[in-house]
Amino acid sequence: MILSNILFDVNGNFQWAGVATIVSFLTFCSTLVSLIFTHKQAKQNRKSTTLVNLRLEELKELKELAITSISLIDSFILDKNAGVRGNKPMSNSDPIISKLNTNFIKLQSILYRSTEHGYKLSSVISACQLKLMMLEDTMGLTDIRIRLDQAIEDYLVTEWNEIEKSI
Image (cartoon, rainbow, N blue to C red; front, top):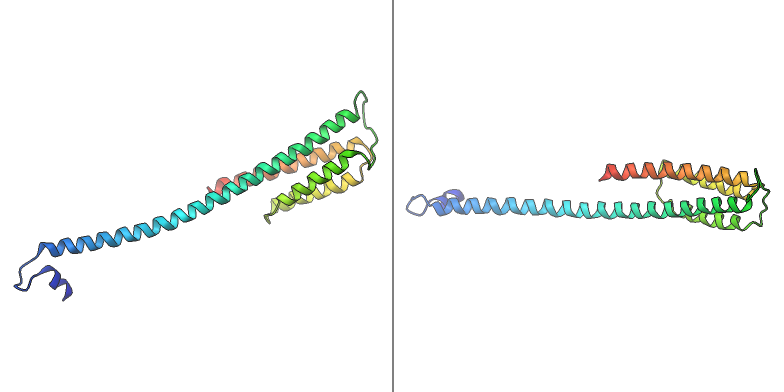
């Protein structure tokens, strides 16, 4: 009944304006639906872009701290072993102990996401902290350096792969 009122006038003549009205209404509805979906997609894209940027910043900070720790170990070993082959004894009063411990605590604080590779890195950092407290010679520092370097590399590769999958 409503459709016939739109398409035909009171005399029963076909009205093209009624067809134009129906087409306009359908166009309006499809545009409205399209706008709603576009808005939802844009909101989701902004959210995922923000999360990716935050994770990239976290990885950058983690890498910088790791490089600082590794450089600290390398320079200490070079200074301590200058002109000497092999290991040199160390004590708990060596300044590198507190500096490395501070860096390890900062590294731990960056790992806020509960992931398997995050737990692995966290456990390696904890093991390095324990080894740091029980150091007897520079060979122990070399072991810490190698373990930390490998664990950070594994973590960064895994995180990067996850980020690429989410993009």
